[in-house]
Length: 340
Ligand code: DAH
Image 1 (cartoon, rainbow, N blue to C red):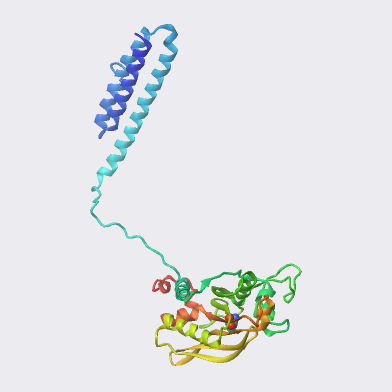
Image 2: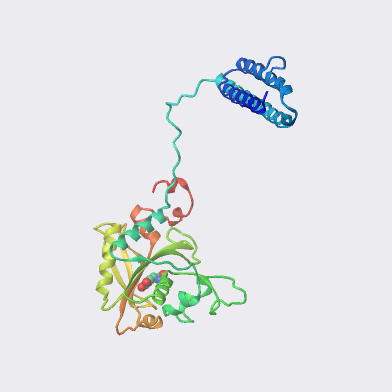
């Protein structure tokens, strides 16, 4: 017999055995196939093996090699079939699965109410042409204080009122020190330093102050800062923007009050109150950007003017959803968070 014929026979045997073993459904059938292919006396493999004697001496090694391969491949197919039969028999012992039963519902998470609020505020302010800017939470005293016209001896810079970082060798008040920003007004400076008027941005993010937590205070909270710089900007523009914002976020009937106040970086300055549960509650500050701040970033206050505001995001969220304790927002209690 020629080597080619021998190898053909082996190929046929291999594919026949592999096809047959794939359809095995019980152990009886498996056993009869084992005997058919690998049976010691009359198995089909044995029959082909006997033909090896008729192969010429030079071709013997190649023929023998392929013979061993096919034997191993049939053995492997048998093992696989055995596993299938075993698996099938355990599954078969219980009731068959019912594919028409409804599946187990997946538990879906959702965005935190503060994050939802941030998205909502961006959307409302976006419609008035404000784009979003971001700044770092770890700040230097220049952006958190100096550029905002807050002098060295101002009480707002007190180490007891700020989270200064323990930077090696730096004293709280020195220029090399770093702190967790206490206000998002820092981003006003960063935006003005890196762009030219006209400017219309908001910046929403975390701020940090060492306040003892109570129903209305938390050492970390979020602010929405707004900054608009152009020629001929007036206090009337500021009031209009804040009114439109409040009407959109808190409802058309919200009552808003501007109370004269003082901030080092605005002149004049106001505090912004909304009426809530029978009383006026402060939501933040605002004002016309102080000429000293404009000069500090290289803008000519004879040409440009602008307004700025900073509102507490948690307060806005709480007022809209009727939440009475800010600590609930950060408790991580899913029973609370699930409601939003
Ligand atoms: N940064 C102030 C604060 O955290 C709030 C504020 C007041 C922001 C007046 C402003 C502003 O932009 O013009 O208390």
